[in-house]
Image 1 (cartoon, helix red, strand yellow):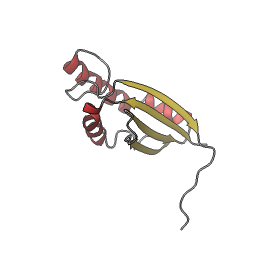
Image 2 (cartoon, one colour):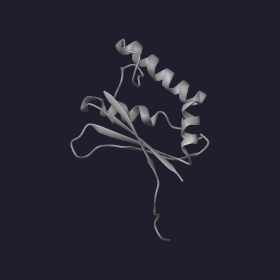
Image 3 (cartoon, one colour):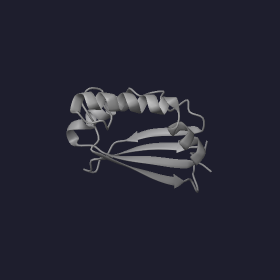
Length: 119
């Protein structure tokens, strides 16, 4: 049974474009992970500051293995170093401007039922 992980990022309006740029630049970081099934970055349209980072995994174990992987560690270490250099804080996703998100929480779901378009 697939597992869905949704990272809920609170992103101030001034950082929305930067967050989207950073995610566009991360292409390939998770796609080759064993058990990875799907990724989407969802932009809010209802006036909220909450972006959703949707990933789907074959199993909880596959997600946890990716979190322990060198690719995960490298990506997050680089982001933390960039954020530290820009803002003096060692958290968030950097690239020279500090964290784009001001908060984050992780939601976990099991896929109970799904559908695809009929041919």
